[in-house]
Image (cartoon, rainbow, N blue to C red; front, side):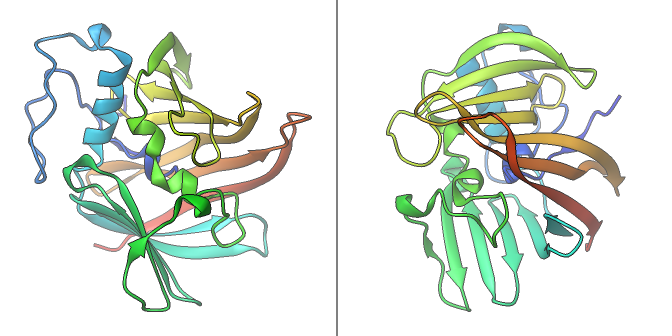
Length: 249
């Protein structure tokens, strides 16, 4: 069984500490592990489950090369830099940095283009595609991890893993998603799947883990599928594969 997994997606939303539990005493560089008054993993509330997911983003200091692939000819290379206080997606031609600040668990989304200083990504930009792929700024922002009043809908086995299906609703109406369903792995605290719905309750985006392998001392999902769904028909409109190629440190 995989005991330590990192899920780079939503794109970074699938990052996981692996083996993070309610009793975890490990302390990441940016702060202490969450505590839940002695609760077992099955006694956690939905909000506490999301807290475990947020905590998992602070545990790594590693860089990876990767690509977003829509077809044989359309491939967008990037550098993924995981740090205790940030997640960076670095693109070239033209130069672009999309920076997720995880310090103090704020998850602020910043961007720098053409060597310009990093600045906040506006709410109006959340729905825009990144480099013509199925990945949007809304996906990278991971705002839904902080939406209040999450609910555990049920427990479900997904790809032979025990998961919680957690549902969160958008409290401010900003961005693409009105509701998000997250399948969260009980053993690792990482997301296995995400389904985002529009304001009419129709699915519009789906993320799913396809394959993983070991990079040094951690397991990493090296291939994931991100699909844009046509709301009216429910059919897949377009699809992007996120592939992690190798560790560079």
